[in-house]
Length: 205
Figure (cartoon, rainbow, N blue to C red):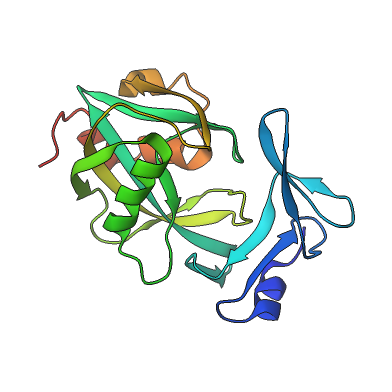
């Protein structure tokens, strides 16, 4: 695996680049194989991930390596949680979520992600972890293995319409989610004591 810290240092603050996850070569490009997005570098390596620095996403470098920040929405309706299955890395069922950009407000970014990924308009929301975002093991296609999550319990109006990251969606009770192939951070989120206490609630205070 390439060295994320070395690549970030080469770019400098606000720098942009897309590098091979295996060898660090610049110029990795996205391609679709069997309906799933992957990345090919000029040296011929094909990987599910790349190191993508777009000059906007908030990140840090520490003992865990590259760490991104994310926002996510637990969209609840009639006691059921909205999940969708991804067609980009990491594969599996997930909640609407996305990377947090520098200087962006987490609540506003969460609303944008809900609109882009599932086509809903957020009508009410509350932060789940009000003290601080939670650091979760979370491998993403942009190269990070850890993310600090800003999580919200949400009500939204409209009928789901998936964007380019999803193939199907469903509304699930907390018990039904246990049978799904959830991505790692969502499995951790649904196992959190605070989340487990809040999910049965039909409304957002």
